[in-house]
Length: 316
Image (cartoon, rainbow, N blue to C red; front, top):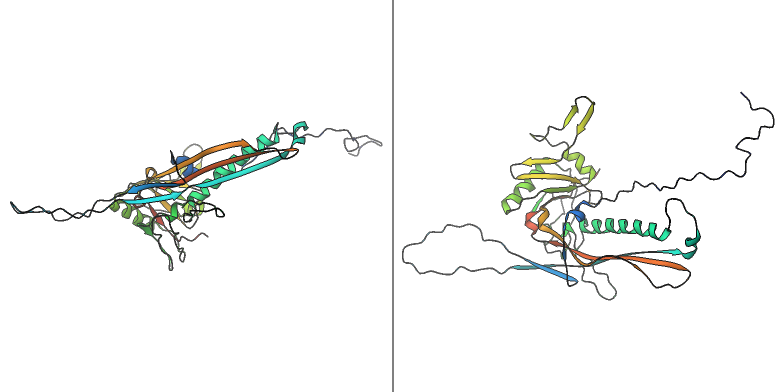
């Protein structure tokens, strides 16, 4: 039906107050599974160092009665290190903000610093997963930590044409090769190799694309595509993969390089913190407020042979 003539409806009213909800919604991901899971230790120098060692290969060991004992040649421990990286972010807000009545937050600077802290944590996770060599830095060059792919040398599969493992010291990066599809056979090969070296991996970090490939793994672990009685849900998940070489939990990561499937022994990694995350106010230089968040840390790979990589996986 039509309105009566001269109806003064809501479209004619000039003084209606805005209806803005006092909530801010965001679905931006903020999970950092590797950084959050890694044990945190203290660093006291910008070059954080540690040592590794290994037993010699087993050999025949039989001697005649009364023979002369000769000492075996021994090898020294290997000294490794990684440089601390400074993560820094700042936000400046005009002091006019103090007098504004805003929806969803009381103080803009507090809201922005909360966002900044989450963003910096994501930056740290990305750096830990990056195929990046360590950089000592100088007066004009920032220090950089070596990420996970720069350490894993011994246990690898699916290395494409032109690809090559790093030295395993963090000093150089993995050379990416021609990409091929991630398979269960590649995964099992790396698991076996890690076991033969003495490692006991427990977490596999992989991109959502590679997680979908892992969902196609076959075997006794494949009891995961079923309808749950009563609610008609179809369950298709892979939480733990059991092999003769141990069991591994699959952890999808948005920040892991999609071409890398990382099979990790969690207690063989640490994050050494030189400066814990700190939120400080900077000196005022005008009619504004500036706050800065800094964190300085590095990645410790206690022994790369406890971990493995399925490299050069196709990503589409």
